[in-house]
Amino acid sequence: MAFEWKEIITPVVTLTAVWLGARFTQRNELRKKMLEIQSEKLEQLFTECSNVLNDINRVSLTVLHTLDDFIPTAESERSVPDQSIQEALRGYREKGVVIDFDAITACQHKLEFHRPKEYQAWIVALIPLLGTLTKMTPYKNMNPIAEADNRKWSYQELTLYRQELDEKRNALPILRKRLTSAMASDYHQLGLSSEPANFWIYVKRWKRVVNAFFHKPPTPPLT
Image (tube, rainbow, N blue to C red; front, top):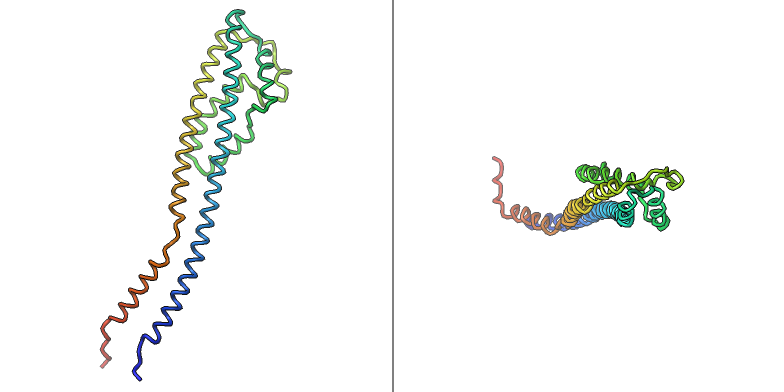
């Protein structure tokens, strides 16, 4: 009975196909899991930063609207006691309209470690704004009214402060847009990377190798 290579090659091809299938299934599952973890971390970071920006914007708008109520009085009476402004802001604090410095620090550290470009944009936009906000709203103090002195804000001071705060607040939507664009791009790339490696591509390659072997001209015997 003539010896045929197919009797050996066929079982080998079958076993190899099974092995390749198991290998790529396991590889794709591990890859998918890693991408899911990366996507979840990216979503969490965006949510945290977005919440921080929303809170700062809400506090900024609260201060601006409060100043709008006091500026006419400052104009007519030439000044407004700082304590009067603090009393008006206290009601908002009690309702939760506050700056969460812990959340700001946590988000800032994550950006610094994972996303240096967005971190730089964060620093440029937020640090000046927070510095301006804390001139009027010392949220770090447990009882800012108790620590308020007899300072009075003149009409010019309130007007200039309001203008400064409003200008710096305008950096928030620009920063938010930049964070959204950068993280959305990365999220999209993760989505593209999540496509599993095509097992059948490798099967076709293996078939070509086998076919090439069978169609290869026989090697002449050594003399």
